[in-house]
Image (cartoon, rainbow, N blue to C red; front, side):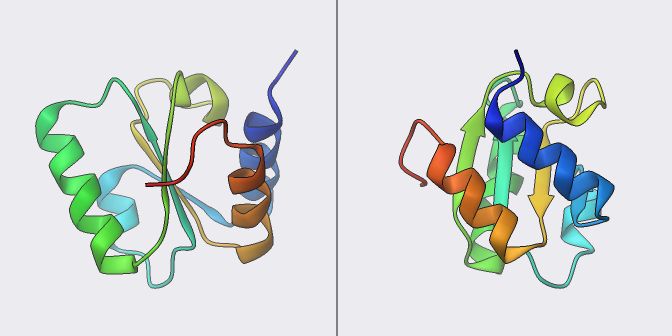
Length: 97
């Protein structure tokens, strides 16, 4: 069974409110939530932290983000819809960082 977070990420993707990848996220204007894969490299984690500070948004770490978004190897997803970001935060097992 798919997790609710994966379902919400799917909703965001179909609505055109999900940006995948570090470079794509860096080019975004407004981001309400960052979802990062725990297997990201150290350099990627540094870039993700910089993006978190730039957008002043919460960061949630997830396992198997690539499988959740349908893009294998994806290490970062940016949610650009406030309602979906709030729903993902409510379902997150960890407190946002």
